[in-house]
Amino acid sequence: MAINELKPLLDELCLNITDFLNENTEITKEHLSEYLKNSAKLISDISDNDLTSYNTQKNLLADNYKNIAKECLTSYEKTSSKISKLSEKHKEAIAACEIEPINLPKLTSKFNEIQNHMVDEVARANFIISELSTQIKDLEEKSNLDPLTKIYNRGALNKYLADMCENATDKYETHLLVIDIDDFKQINDEFGHIAGDKILIYISKILKRTLRDGDKVFRFGGEEFIVILNRIKDGECITIAKRLLRLVSENKLIYKGNNIGVTISIGATKLKVGDTPESFITRADKALYRSKHSGKNKISTEPI
Image: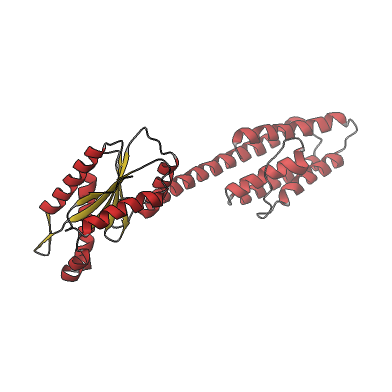
């Protein structure tokens, strides 16, 4: 519940009490005591399972005052203990009226204290909500990263391609590369799975260092990666793919005194209007298949 919604409601509560006093010239302490007891009961009856939302400020005590308290309870569970303190403050006001003549300034002051207390609690609840929202955002970001290579994972790829295909136009050319590490099983068998993990990290770092800021790198699964090249011509796509082949094949990973050399095979295609993520990847997979079965360490393209 926003503070700017809460203040008018509490102001109206104070005004309503003032009107009640002005309209009833014959009011007694007992009348006022009963009125305040009813208000206190509304707050005391609030439960954590009572989740009605705030809709209107017209029905002051029966609905809205109760709904505002519910909003606070829903936003921040600990506020429930603070709401109970409001009930105590009402009771203190009732007790004061029973032993002393009605003192309107004092009564107004008491309700101002309640209002300030409520505003403070809402501000605190909003702060907690903001902190939780930041944590959720961080968790979502982390959940989009592959824990081993620290590049985007398949879940992030699915979301990215879905949005890309939905908004595809002929204005900008977008290419997709499917990259597979050649003979990866043989590397695992010869040097162990830890060496295989280090190869995956090594390849991902080459990809990130070589590509432009606007390009995206994803781990597709196992020893496969997907690269999205944005706003790039066919010839430029081939040039980048050949550079990746060369950089990987010319460098070696040193692991426990062993120089481990690897190569990659690449399949490339271009996004067309009407593509789905599946059709886009499938075309690149066909090109990758040709690269793998024609000698490896190659790039093949699949026309649209």
